[in-house]
Length: 181
Image 1 (cartoon, one colour):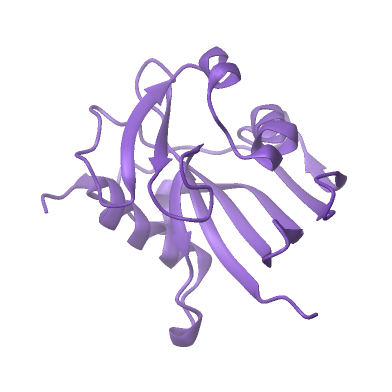
Image 2: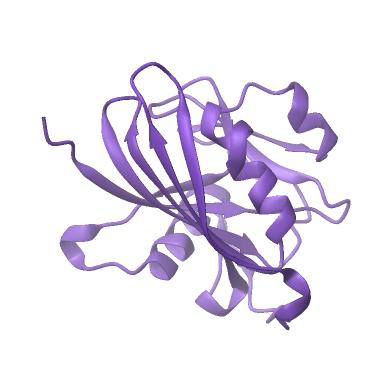
């Protein structure tokens, strides 16, 4: 059976204490689990991953940003995720620090967490296995990874590209602006 392909963006946002903003999801996929905010590309309009990330930042956390406020940290593909679909995910880090917790959202509730606190959170299996470790190792750099998700819950991972942070010079643009909904 052929599965649909879904394309999404995830936003890795941090506060001044370098705590990451996560959303406890009220909707599928990953209902009841903590994930970075983000969403699916509007493929019917030809939306780019950067435009999608900017739109999702405004819709979910009330922050108007430009593509230059983002650093593409990773691209992850998941083959047969939960037996439902294939995913192509663009993982962006927002280069500006968040000053406060975003207001509640219909997608779920937000909270900031330290890196160590992630160990005790309910996270999607693929996030816990590889996506978070790869993000931390490549923060400020870039990686591409592929996961073959098997029906028995086993996942086979392949790191397809890895550029360490020390080889990339990236500076925040300072263009992020909070909007009120």
